[in-house]
Image (cartoon, rainbow, N blue to C red; front, side):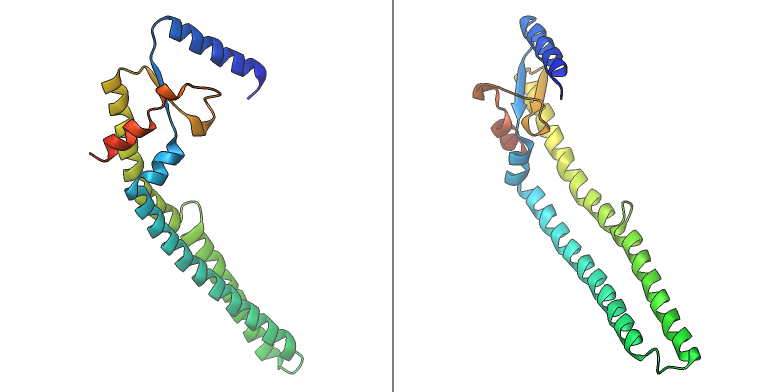
Length: 168
């Protein structure tokens, strides 16, 4: 963020404060680290990620082994056997590529599982933030992690209030 953008935000904030606006801030990283449902979702994702990673590396190791065997023996093989081994390696390489797209790609299985686990948790957190904001009469609540706060007095930190709301 450049200096002129910071000045604009500062001036906007000061002008809003002059009109009786009420501000607060949270630390989303701290909330996530303290929220049990999020930690559980992260653990499940970690297990799933390691499982998929192992499958991928097993397939890659198999292809590497096939390639090494082929390189060692290709001069001793018939042209038919060479073509057969090359087709096997090409097929496995295609399977690995499909695995990457279907399981690990941006629309893949892992991403979908991440969304399915994270979305309900993030929705709960957003609901808690909204409730704390409404109950406290806040006009704006910022997130220090997003870099929107350069300085704030601790009295405006709503992180603990949001955590308490989540625990209800």
